[in-house]
Each structure stands twice: as structure tokens, then as C-alpha cells.
Length: 250
Ligand SMILES: Nc1ncnc2c1ncn2[C@@H]1O[C@H](COP(=O)(O)OP(=O)(O)OP(=O)(O)O)[C@@H](O)[C@H]1O
Image 1 (spheres, rainbow, N blue to C red):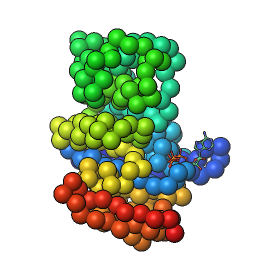
Image 2: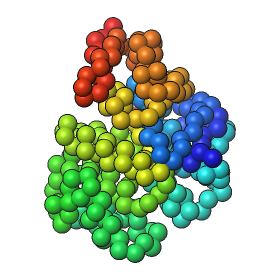
Image 3: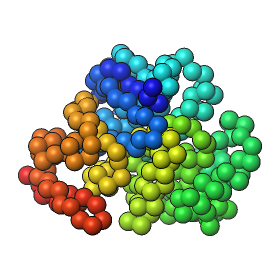
Image 4: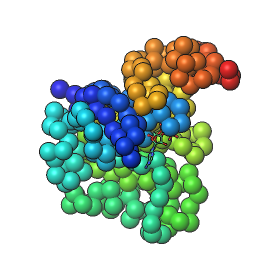
């Protein structure tokens, strides 16, 4: 049984349909990238999968259980979520922000877990620094550490590498990949299509609120899909460091 399933799920915001009959499944052990142009519906899909939007139609299930039947505690145990907005209301030390990701679950050794999560994404040395006194990329990694602090079997991350330098981007994607290989289902949105091709098992392309492709990366991000939905001309080049997309505007 898939860890995460969306079945013909639709979302309306202010009576406007923004996601239409989305169906997908993510198994434990898989890392799946959601790609698509700005405004396509990627964040909406991820919020729906995390239980932050109610489906207007269809349903979302974790381990076959409809998300709406889970208590917020059960949902917190099952799904960890990194929001696209990197908002933190208070200038708390990074370690306390990371710990907040697991505090409600009453986990033991939460500060130890928080430190390890910060170490994992390369900001362990900033554990005692206030998050308002960090660079954007450092703060983004603290928030990712907060999402990774629990052992939730489903990890959903909205643009986890936005604003990161190339080395940090590779580090974070490697860590997310390791998380998937530890039998979690990892669902993340990415604008870097070469990174999606290098790291994801599958790519789901969302355009105009619909899933228009769901396949292995190079089978989903074909020149036709790139032209029709991303409005770019794209050519894949095999390199020793993975596939690279060469692009130009149409
Ligand atoms: N709170 C809101 N109120 C009204 N419309 C919204 C709201 N949130 C999202 N939308 C609309 O829903 C559509 C999908 O938005 P969404 O944030 O899911 O796109 P996205 O694919 O994540 O885009 P991006 O790549 O720019 O982050 C867009 O047309 C957006 O304007």
C-alpha cells in the first residue's frame, strides 16, 4: 500500500478551482518532485497532501487512512511539512526552532534530535544563533531541520532548496534522498529541473492546476512538456554529474 495517496482531489480557493482531480501515490522509499511553472498549483497540491487544504472533491490518504479521519496529533506523527514561506515569528535560537517540529509529539531527547537535524543540513554550528540574525539560506535550512526532526514517514517540502547556494542545494537534496532511502515517502517541489532529474525517482508536472505528467524524470520533462507547459525550449545533456537541462526562451 502507498504511504501517500491523492485520489481525484480538487481544491478551490475563494471559489476558484486551483487544483483539479489530482491523483498520485508515493511509496515509502521514493522521492518524488513536483515541478511546474509559477502559479501552477504545486504549493496547493503539497498543502493538500499535508492536510492544510480540505479537498473540495476526492481524498488524501496516508497508509490508506483518509487524512480527515486523523487527529492533528496523528497527522503530525504521519506527515512533516516545510512551507514555502520562510516565516518565523520570534527570534528564537535555531535549536529551539528545530525542536518545535517535534515538541507536540512529546518525543524524548527533542533537543538532541534538533541538534542532529541542524547538523544534517549543515547549520549545526548556528544552533544557538537567533534565526532573525541569520542569512536567508541559513534560516531556510533551520526550517528544513524543523521539518526533519521527527521520523514522520511522509515528508513534504515546498521548494526546500530555494535560496540555497549550490553546495547547500546538493547537501539538502542528498539528505532528502537519504530520508527517502530510509523508507520515507518524500514529496518536494523544485524549480531546478536538472536537480529534479538528478535526485528524484519520479517527476510530477503540474500546470494550470492539473497533473500533466507523472513518470521517471526524463520521461516527464520531455521537450514537448517543457515547450507546452513551461514555455521553454529544453534539451537534456548527459554529463558525468547527472542530466543537465540546457534551456532557452521560446
Ligand atoms: N490564498 C490564496 N488566495 C487566492 N488565490 C490563491 C491563494 N493561494 C494560491 N492562490 C492561487 O492558486 C494558484 C496556485 O498557487 P500555488 O501557490 O499552488 O502555485 P505554485 O505552483 O506553488 O506557484 P510558485 O511556483 O509561484 O510557488 C495561483 O493562481 C495562485 O494565485
